[in-house]
Image (cartoon, rainbow, N blue to C red; front, side, top):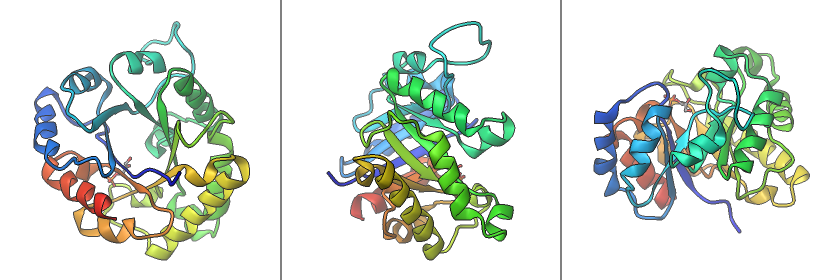
Length: 246
Ligand code: 13P
């Protein structure tokens, strides 16, 4: 099995019920040649999944490690599943930075998500300081080792490499920099998991229509986790098309 191709959109804290109309506009761009997942704010998961747009799956942006309990403001993985989500993003750098999430937290959340039947999109990525210090590959390996649980398989886990300094900045790494990190991720996963060679690896950070085809041509890049350019169908559709053609 070759890794599947996935165009994932992370709407972050953007969008409202009116924004669901973007899915109708996107429907024509989805032809089954790659998987398409949109992760809206949690309140929009159920209305989005209820639209049942063929070929578009829905995901959460975080979940709690526990199945239920006294955790005000949090969401359990099974609740995301119940609302129609099939995927959940975990360990995004914004959650690591804003909510102090550790690798161990991310791993525990991933276990809970897998138990609930969700596919996890687990994020790793270095800061600009770590890259400048020559620590990128070590940071990535450490995050992977700590954030990806032993129950991960090519079916239930997708890895997203998102350099923190490339998110929302319009700056992207060179092709060689992306290739180097993705090769490291592939090597680490292949060493640890029997089906590590088949896990989908996404690149994220300032992906847009203008650079998508070039990024998708890089070895071991099986898709993208897209922020800003996933909000509007006119921006996301050409990225999906570039991945389908890759
Ligand atoms: P941008 O595509 O807006 O840079 O965001 C990337 C990201 O963080 C997706 O999770």
